[in-house]
Image (tube, rainbow, N blue to C red; front, side, top):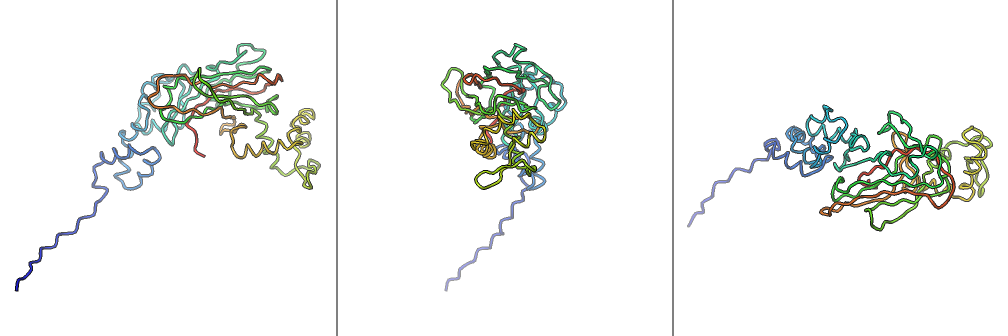
Length: 341
């Protein structure tokens, strides 16, 4: 009877310890992720943590032309620029730098590392912008990025335009352009009159849409959410509704004439619809920023990779209504990657 020989059992494979992987290898892998993912993976182990601090990782997240951009800053001697790549990335995400003689600012989108720019009002082409009767240049607070703004004293023909070479933007990126402005007293002439805006390559056909610069809509929406004062409500369809007109007169925010003008929207239901649009973030009405200024969407633009140099044009105008408008302070136009909703 033939006996079967048993082969010796091989030892079970040892479990792979992540700490045994070369740190350079981990750093190279992390560089193919993104800023947010790299920070999340840093908690896997101490080796991943050390690798996540490597310049190999964050150099990939910085724009390829970052040194050229930093050379255009008004403060090239900033010690933060000589630090490690991660600190430089975070610095550019949290604190925009001024470039091109202080007429533009540059920053990075923290989620993606894509380039963001803001064109100052000084760098915009503003019709009648050099006429003090219609526009004035005024100093701004410390929270302002450029230290000054263009005050719209009053015009019946509002038109401004900003441009930027497409090669300055990150490739294969969907951008949104915003007009950034302040409206300390709410402005006037914008509550019932939309402005036309467009974004696209210079010389090409562009989609024109209508938006409102009525920052007071945001304030009125807040007032509608406040408990109404005695005598500041009225009947509407069996329900008692808050009346911004009466409350503003009572609280001394506006004159009765101004408040009467604002009531038009509420009488025909337009105010309710507009407040809903603000709540949904439709982009048609201004949105308040963290520093107290406002922004309104001008439009979107996708930067195609491999396409030759062109000029991105952002345009805003109100030349049809003929009514006078003013009381806003234009800070500039910001271009940043479109936010996911």
